[in-house]
Amino acid sequence: MEATRKIYRQLPGTLRMPKNLKHRRVEVILLPLDTEKFSHIDSNTGVSPLARFAGAWTGELLVREDQGAYEVREEFK
Image 1: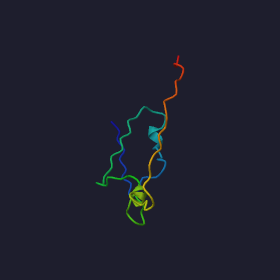
Image 2: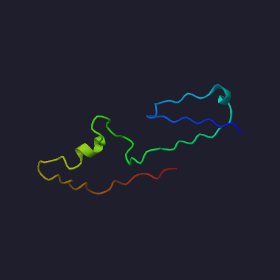
Image 3: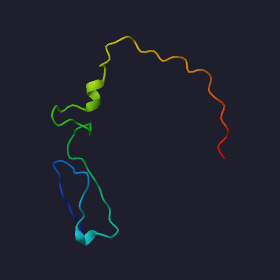
């Protein structure tokens, strides 16, 4: 069995495959080596972009208005 192992400090958007494995049936396994819970971390601040917005609204309380009755739709065939 041939095995190829490569560890990336930061995974690129695309991976180059070894020539001897191209156009062959292969199994690809990606295992994160860090214990970070978020995959989208801002490298400058170390904080998830979504976390920056959590609880950020300081205006009036947002209330969702009544949406009315659910419309009757035709059955999907």
